[in-house]
Amino acid sequence: MRHTKHTPMLLFIIALFSCNAANAVEPQYASEGIAIPAATADEPLIDQFSTEKALEYLEQGTTAWQAKRKCVACHTNGTYIQLRPALTPILGKPNAANHEFLVNEITKFKRAPTTSLLQGIKPTQIAYMAQGMAEWDLHVNGKLTVETTAALDLMLSVQSADGSWGNIDCWPPFESSSYQGATVAALALGTAPGFLEAMNADQQAQVAKLKKYLKTQPAPHDYGKVLLLWANTRMDGLIDKAIQQEIVTMILGHQNEDGGWAMRNFATADTWGGGSRSEKLKAEKEVTNPPSDGHQTGLAIMVLRDAGIPADHPQIQKGIAWIKANQRTSGRWWTRSLNKDTRHFITYSGTFYPIMALHKCGELK
Image (cartoon, rainbow, N blue to C red; front, side):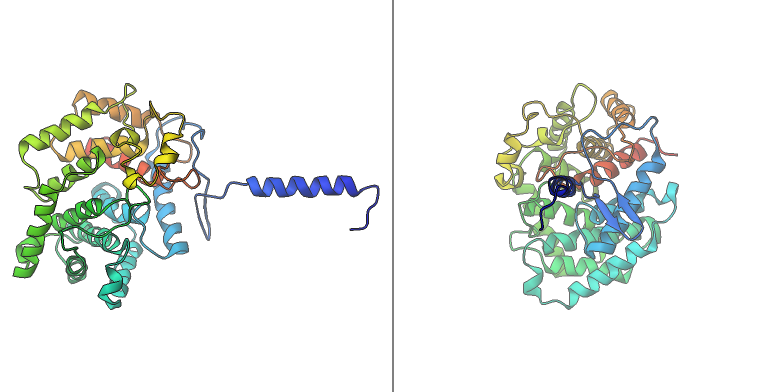
């Protein structure tokens, strides 16, 4: 560069631009026509609770993820396909493109060598897809379809020898353990209309192996116990009444004074993801008193309701009040990632779970 009297100012402008570019926060979700702002703890609260804003965030998030990533991720479209079909009675059918995407993904996975399907997160990913299709059949089609049967058949074909479903353990709470994968498989099997009754002898043996695994394998933490209780609401007999009451009592006991629940209270830093996020979690300033978040508050109420706890239970009503008071202007609820302080994709389930909690308490009209 040829130096002139303007050179210092020019260099300052370039440095300032570079600094701003480096500090620019990327959207949480983005694709053609969609740009959802980054999720942050200091996002303002919305003036008045809005179902419409929450649903807009959820629909745009899953659409953008599928358009850009072209895969099923537990934290975004995996959560969407788990939950959105159940809202059909009040919101109408989900976009059929989401179901078509699942069918195409299952077809693609069926063509792959079995050895590759047993690797990494793929068994649990298949379980999410199978549950999504089972939910679609239950709430939209009203009967079991050949596409869902094929998805469940594929899911059973990748079961591990111990009865669980393979998973990775470095992205809790979803991509965190084979135990978590097993609970998703149980949800899928227990949801699909008529599938359990129509299984062949080999499949019956596989389901028996799954049940034995969930009955005998200790949950890795209290969060895992919540998932076990949820699975038991679809596949009866995984736990007895005494254990069910223990888990219900545990969930209620973790409620914060403000009425919400904090995900971080359901496991220690060393047990999330097998300890893979221990250093990050122990360094958080709220480590001894984590704040309530959308993910755990919604999940707690959703599972408690499915387990038969009445909507007018004082602690559930306190949780519903927290949900209505803590929505952000984007339509979502804040939940801090257990993994990295970047995209915070956990706010997606941290928004869908509260919406489902409201639905299960008769609060959505």
